[in-house]
Image 1 (cartoon, rainbow, N blue to C red):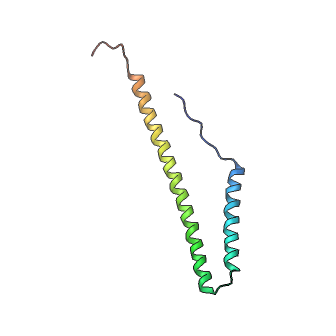
Image 2: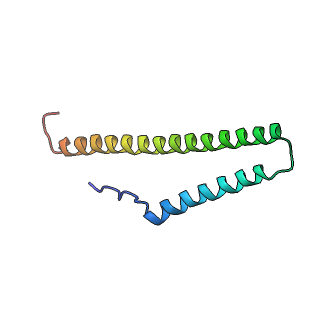
Image 3: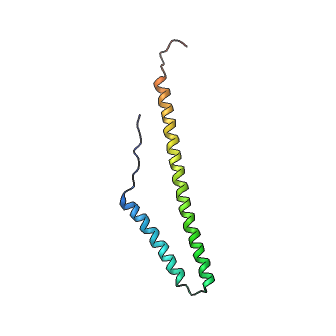
Length: 95
């Protein structure tokens, strides 16, 4: 039975993802803070930013969970197939 290699993300990959998230959020926050509009419009844009951030985090969790579920189902199916193949004897004359 061949098991697929688990993909491992490096520390540099995690750092890049976190740094990109912080930079994009920070740049948008600074842009909203210095925008020449009144406080109500600024607050509306800030709420939109928070909604976008929470939606992105939720989406990434859903995608990760779906991938883990597919991997687990694939492993169970492979185990069942391996069991059937090991129990199968094509030369069995009791048929």
